[in-house]
Image 1 (cartoon, rainbow, N blue to C red):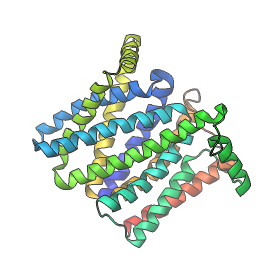
Image 2: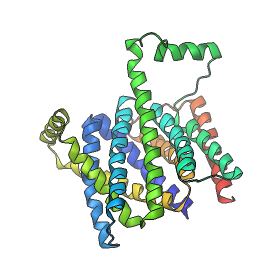
Image 3: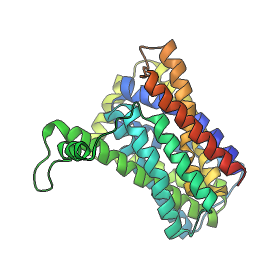
Image 4: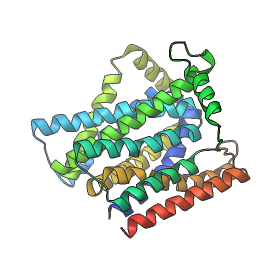
Length: 322
């Protein structure tokens, strides 16, 4: 059951991902503003309590709010990394690290372990996801790899050349978002083990909403949000944003449901399935709307992505028959 729910959520999330990249590149231009808007819209999850009313104890409420606040912090790092560079540079880093961090944290704090077959499927899915999400692959000799690393990150005792500081910020933001995503998923799994799913999900969304309100206490961020609101002239952009947030909310709810049913690391390793959906969506959109979205799809890149899709298919098969 968890496998079907996870795959369905990643299908919806692939479309949301493309829309988020478009909005960050063309419309909003600020990770803080975008995270604020997402956080504010989290309050509308309260309608789910009408279907399953539940009120937590003080301790439970504190943990739920902490999880929601942590998720907003994660979004800030994620949108910042997504805005700083092409999606094909950000996704491989985050997509590979989230399941790895989740695997380590869930084992340490939840006692979740994978069977040998599941562990092999886990590794196959991660590698397939990396292959299908990167734009192209270059192989360096050991010396060349070290020289490139030193160019980007600088000598241990020296400074980092200004030319490569944006790259360092991109890597740091991507790693930070991956780590925070993993911490959030493990924490929310712990919550679902102790509390009812719908109720705890809604109360954790209150934490995200409170975090969005706290953003307003920082003068620079508050000014940026107010200026953005003044610049919103057409309801068309707002309607598109609301529609995307509804889809994102649905995908997020389904991912959380899958996590409540299955293993945290395995659910996160299935992000490779999202890249498969993303690949075909981008392939279609880049041909139909080249001004909006473009993707390098040369012969070598296509072969690489086909190998990635094949690995993901093998990983899914291993999970299904496990």
